[in-house]
Image (tube, rainbow, N blue to C red; front, side):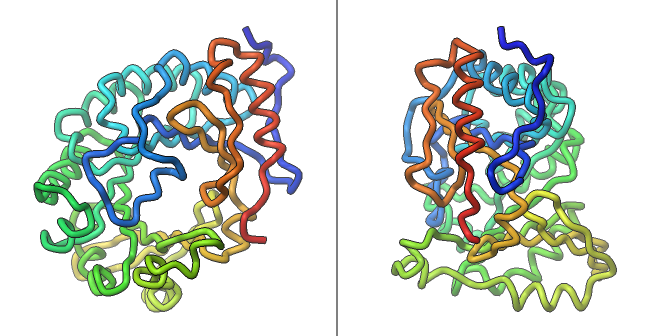
Length: 315
């Protein structure tokens, strides 16, 4: 077993502490969203077992990590998701959250809460069925089920619930006011996310077609806001706005060419197939732990290397 008595928080060479993990539980999904980056990986059926995930979490926790985000793919497609959350909670006293499309939440929300999950991010990138169906590219329109998932998460106490909304040119950019109203009515935080790409893809047809800067929207919200706070992860602005439908918080995720965003990144990623990844936008930054997942001391060695290799993407 790993000796954690003398362990301490690890910092990269830019003085950034690593206190959170973003763990990709699988690389498959029942949606096929047109902007999905699959956490910087390819679709795959490979994934770590609950026991292996627990070993990695235990190593990270020994170095001060106390915040976990589970992602996919769609993490709720894993039949052992409750076991994974329970095993993680044994080592983490801080926040454990999960990003989901919400479809499986009606049957899983209560169990997730009992297992130790604190809250959820739910992806809902349009308020009308036509654009939602277009964005998710599915045979069935799941928007009603996503709304049921939001309600199930509320009833289970998985809050504060964040609604992830990736802004896209000529598709949903005119729906921001509608999403603000929806989130105010449903006691959710609206998380407006900028369509992002790495340097190599900034001039791609897809990026040019869909990217919308968030600055104009944020300037408008800032003028209406009654208060502002900051999410320590990436120093994201979160505004409190009083609307006709109630009070709502609106958070902005603006990664593109944002040096402040990267300066405050305190996260290390883990891919579903067992690799540490230092940054979503980097393509050659994988640190393989596939072959050492039964050995905590070897995981620790690779973890240290991955933390030391972290470099702000925009700087």
